[in-house]
Length: 367
Image 1: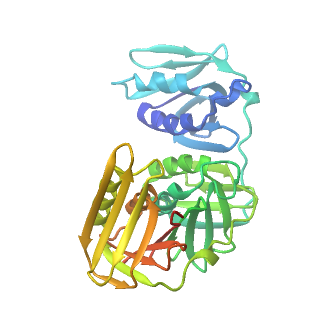
Image 2: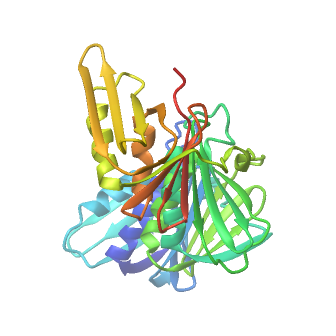
Image 3: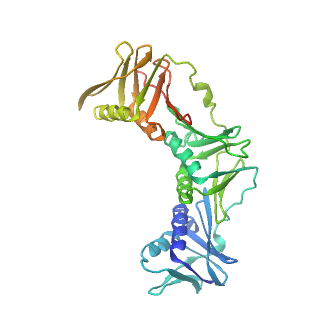
């Protein structure tokens, strides 16, 4: 193997791949990046057995070959190259020799034949979407996913379709977030459960692609993201997601619109004095159009804040985990949001007033 490529393109690819490479003491090959020549390109591969990535960058190939080297060492080396524009890669006694105008470095290699095969998906379904839109769907809901692996189906982000609308869902049983991306061509029979531990890697790779179109392919075991020079695959959960639609209320007894910044201010102030469960008590008084938020901590003190605001319907006193309310607000594009309540034992529905693409449900705290 001997080739020359642009250092910045090489480094950008290694940054993406290094995060996916595993930290496995029993399988050190998972800590490596596999470099292989193909036609006029250099292929960079990494995997942790859950997620795999393959990136192609243009290169001037003199001789073909492949080598597996430690991912973090390679990235650390590249991070400390400042002025170099081009870099030469070649094999030296089966190790990787890297040369620039000012440096010559050899990184010890591992046997490339031990590197796991990154599976190519047998496509059963597929659609195209802008990477930035896919990221917005994942980021809008992933915070609501359960973090425990006890119930893997809800420690996840669920993707399904309703006609040509792509819907992202996450829940931890106490709250539920749903984001819809409209009008995606060729959507059909989509029921994919992405493990939460893989969602951040997916977001990171997609973010690097910006507004580029990606092809999303899937079957019951794998999800794949593909562009002309990148292929990302990850395992999905072979299971059934809970029928979350049945818990969404359809009738509401108390309702109000509130500026997002006003709601954030009330919540952040109340959390200073909330207990270890972040409990706040909210009182709605339609007769006086007053919203009151009370928080109390025996060791710190208490706070009571009020806001004059138009409230429709019946009076209500209800308690929530303030963090669960704050977590969702960045997912709304509207400056004014709608709060809709049924009763003290039923979930609160939060929606945008003009953008109907995001919905959030949160269960109250039972006293």
